[in-house]
Image (cartoon, rainbow over all chains, first blue to last red; front, top):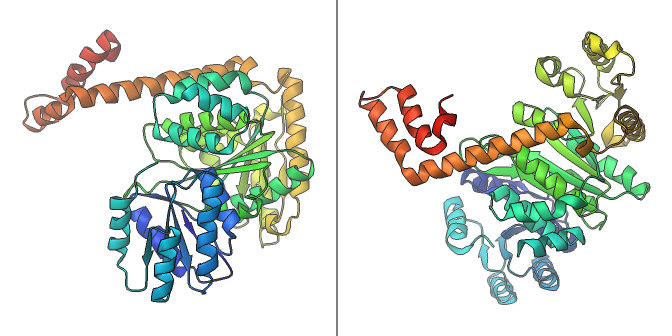
Length: 125
Length: 324
């Protein structure tokens, strides 16, 4: 599932990522803009997804990403892998990974690499 | 494990429902036991099929319908079917975007499904998914499909009421309806009716529906044509009233809403199920036998014609069934 949490209105990147996964043979649920962490987690559970890709370009990732992970744990769905993509300061990447975000992709990441990472690191649950 | 998942589904456990639908989609064989266990708990939901070309506003309409049904304290399940790319096998399932505001409502369960395009199995898996949402206790189940192709038309046959959605000015769209799904439409809806040409589209539809002489027989349902603007919530309440009216018509005609009591419906469902199991079984055995690749080679090498090859593949698996 590709999701855009928070007030960030720029979803070009998220759409391109969704398209890249589709072209690689994935089924991608796209939730659209302005989602709360609660909405994202509920949708992920109803759709029974293997992975959530969170896109953020607006700087609220330090709250939003850990909150998604926390809600997944609360619901007993911590086996859903969470990744992030967007613009992040280096120290935030460390912090997000410590919180449990499996991987972070920043500007310049190649689509093939992002798809390949999932092929290699995410197993169907 | 599967009877356990069935119990959880019947108790309304969202994660169990989500997992069972995934297993149905993936064709996990153990699913059958769970489906057998939930079957006695199905048959009480009202199933609405919404079909129409891409961009006519199906998801937006369903989003509004959910709000109206929730106001009546009814619970709602949605199955949104989107096409799989024939090239990559992947799919972007974006119907949720328009309905996400309902995702925190416990009375609503929304699930996206990809067509995957394998041997007409879509009808079967959608029907099973409807049973799952029915067993979890949803009052209404809305199935959204792009109304193109036999599979899609078959899906709407499992609905009590089928709504066909069009927009003004899509001449070709109406042509497509003419070609096949006119017969399955119980209610026709022109969305975006503020656009130019809505009246004309309504007249065109009326003409085509009226050509179906059967409709004038005593006690037949005559499909209404509504003009709505789903995004502004105009006409949605009227649509739900028409759906109710159609439901009442079904009760009057068949003595109830249960498809289980109707021979035509049960026959359809059982035929599909037998067909799908048979195809699944044959394909599995083909892969085990490796006879298929050998047959392809024989044809390419000019040693065999495809008709003989087909016999040679099917006879060991099906006996005389394969050749008659």
